[in-house]
Image 1 (spheres, one colour):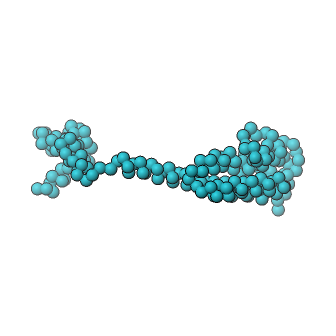
Image 2 (cartoon, one colour):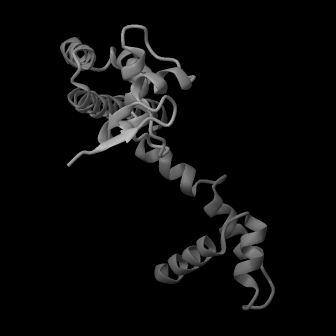
Length: 196
């Protein structure tokens, strides 16, 4: 049973399900549109846009922004379907089917979140391609960088050969001198022991 609730602003009676905003206020759509200072697209009824935003968290402006950004990633027919659904939701509201209009707007909001996922995935693919294109080295040159004369491994090996102190401070001193971590020094020491 729905029941009635009175608008906190004009006092008119509104069905309770359609009255409460996310902030807990009770307002009719007309008062909600008047008191909010949000910007809404011109094609949507201001009262409907305010109701969708403050009752369900649905932002028509964000949906429009996502549709514009997704034009390069998603097929045009998919974008057209979302736009048609938004127009249908607006028409339902204007015909007096407020709850059905909010449900339809909720479905569009969730669809646009799917577009956001597609945009994020496309951006990750582009970044991945840039990394692959610029960061690859051949196996030989990669090994030379890791173990050649100017490598950190070579610096650790030189520091180990030059070290004359006690066994307890050897790892820490060599790590500091070579600019490497103590873990890396221990790994090289283990490699040297296994080679013998």
